[in-house]
Length: 263
Length: 346
Figure 1 (cartoon, rainbow over the protein chains, first blue to last red):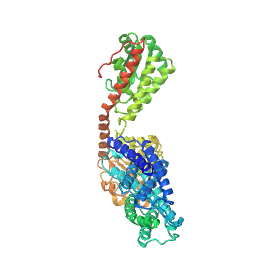
Figure 2: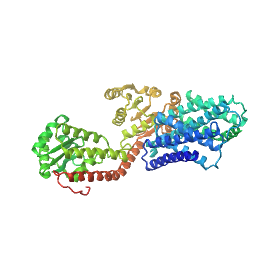
Figure 3: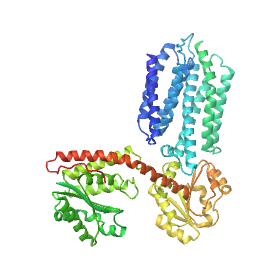
């Protein structure tokens, strides 16, 4: 049942991805509802999968790389549904669909990993730490997507004659606003995750905690300098992409966390 | 009974002739009434815009009625003109092309749809339409909607003013809160400023070497005049600068603007340089948050828009043919209508 739910959600994300590709290829993309419905459908099925998996393991289902990737993909979809629809940046969906589809495809291609059953009493702080950190990474992934869109549109606006993508991308001030809200949201969640990490009963490895602190610090400094008008949106967009790449490097540390949860 | 259309437009008559035939909004109802009586029309709609004057009618003898319509219009206008005539399938096709903007001076413009809707509404209110023209015009509005939704005929800007507006909207989104500085009192700059005002810009500052000319244009456009030696002091507070002065050298360099941009924080600045020789240093475009477009760039974008629309015309014509066939199929079911055949597109 779990795999069917996951395959179903992957199909929905593929649908959103294919629709975006076709529309963008035809040069007539109009922010429509199909993207939203596709991602919402994928999200519902993914939530079902995580619920069943959570029941099976008796905790938040982030016990191995496979589950972490699915959870991360779920977080990106959640952030899109909250931010993309609220701020009506529908095109964010066109860029989000390939990301969530890609994450989930990698998860599905991984060798089938059985759910790791809980051994010993649950640690609420550990689960809060892990889940909020992953949702934060999902939100920051979307900030990275908004950053890419910002840089593309900025380049188009600087060109003598912009290309066809210029017509379908949102205004750069809208994208800058989306980046700012996503950064705030992501940094707050990451902060909660890190604070929760201090209360975990089992000590976390130095590499993992150091990497998490480094990612948090980069995002916090970028946000601080941006709000103080020291950094321009252009640089912030570049840092959003760079910092998320750095965050992806910490995924192996997440895997270590998964191993620890399984103990 | 046959549907027909007679008229003249920007391709068949010059503006001096078109203005003679133009029908004032207030006299449409009385004109319709007289026209129906004189030309023995069962139904009629009069469309009068700055680019065309057309009569759509339904008559048992379309040829005689079309002639009578032309005579009547010439008598009212006090001038002679060559009218084109389209009957049945060609008449329907012509109306569909008109509402889709394919017959407009600027292909794909959407203002014509509103004008046709108003003309039809006026005829409907005065009881000049019946089943045939109601069906024809309702179908025309459906074609226009489908064409706008399914093709790119309305996409892209096709004039310097609309290109500037499109760029501004891709930078700032809503233009209502944007402040515009216009340097020079030339027509080109004023046109772009008007385009921006038509999209919501409310605050406009004008500066010219001759202050009186700036003040005059400011009164006309509803803005505020500024002495020319003070225009740089306005830079931190404006979002868009349009320049069309006759200055021989550069008015603004990257070195001068860089500290201003630092003081502006994260707010972008859009520079529109319409002057030849150019007023702004091209290196300004390399600054973060500065977007500079000169007259060549704007004209190239407008030309690109025209070409892109041209590529969409064929797709529009295909959609129109489907609707022409649908309308003719409906007409064939009507006992009071002639049995039309689908003729080739003109």
